Structures are given as structure tokens and as C-alpha cells.
Image (cartoon, rainbow, N blue to C red):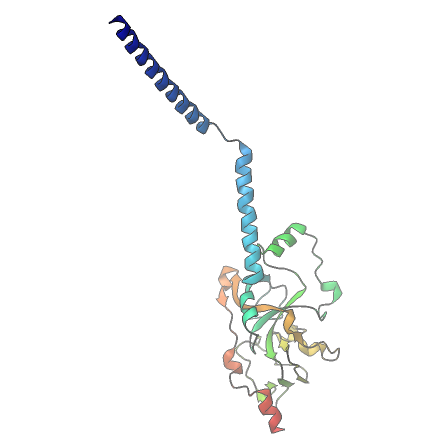
Length: 262
């Protein structure tokens, strides 16, 4: 009988010891979870979030939408000095610009004088612009409106002082700077295939295609076009969709029809 009691006591003691051990382990795990993780894991998490955000911004800028800063008044009043705009990069891969579109393009023809080209000395801003976090303020890009595309015969001026495309005078009053003439001097060009004749909406303040005819660099190459501007995003007070002026160019005859009439 005594041995049975001792056995029962031993079993009870063993069970109690096992339970206490389990409780101790649970308490240890709980205490470990409550211990501070330290500063580095939090910093690493923040850096990881920033890294992925920059990757996403770079992809958006490269393949979808890109921001630009307007550094001059050549497109007034459609675009004003210091406006921020967005350009449809994705659409540039899907279709070619048309007459009336506002396009941003690289200055591969060196229209911009060397003393006005980009001389930015802010590497941080340049890096953020490169990945797409900030709008591109580079002076090596230009923005103008497409007036003629491949095959078009563009001239100025008609009897009433208007620009003509394939023999058709166009009414540009909807976007021209108030009081500005379509052009202060005559010109006569035929646009090569795959290239564009462009002009600023503020003709008196725009050194556009007209000013580079004598040098033979008046046309913008298709490969230089970054995309079509579609919205003024900043300042908020000027937020608006940008018009391609389809109604201005809707009745323009094709270049072949014009050539057949000659």
C-alpha cells in the first residue's frame, strides 16, 4: 500500500514538473517576443519600401507616364512658365503623333543654344528626376505643337495670314497666344516621312521649326519624341486636360490628294 502511494506521489510530482517546464518555455517565448527588435530591422524595412517605390516610379516613368517642367513661355497660354505636365509615354509606343498634338521631344538637332542647355549641378534632383520621382526639369527637351507630319506641305502665309497645310488654311485662334500672328515671316516646307514640323503656341516667343529651316534642322524625328502631353498637373489652379486641337486639323486633305491636284 505504501509503495502504491509513493508511486502516485512520484507520478504527481513528475506531471507537475512537466507542466511547470511547459509554462516556463511559454513564458520565455512570450518574453522574447516582447523584447525590442532594435533599430536596424526598422531601418531595413523603410529602406526596402523606398527601394521598391523607386523601382515602381522608374517603371511608370519609362513605360507609362512621365512628368516634365515647363521652363519657357513658348507654349503660352496653353502652357505657362513653371507648369508641370504629364506626358503619355505608353501611347507613344502604340501610335504616332498627329497634327495638333502637343509633344515633348529630345533636342537632338541642337535647337537650344549651348549657353542655355542643361547645366544642372544638383545630383540629388537629377537622380530623382531620372527615376521619375520629380518632373524632368532638363533643358535638353522641348515641347511644341505638331503642325505637319510626314508628307505634309506646310506654308505661310495665306491671303489672310494663316498657316496652310496641304493647301488648306487653318484657324489657330483657339490656342494661339492672344494677339500673336500665325507667323511673322513666310516659309514653305514639305515634311519628310517619319518627321514632324512643330510650332509653339506663342509664336513670337518660340524658336520652333520655322527658325531652323536655313540650317536644314527644322524637322523633329519620330525617334526623338518622348510622348504626347495630356494634362497640366501643377499648379493645382491650372489643372486641365490638354487639347489636341482635332477640330483645327479635321478637314486637312491628305498630302497625296494635294500632290495630285498640282
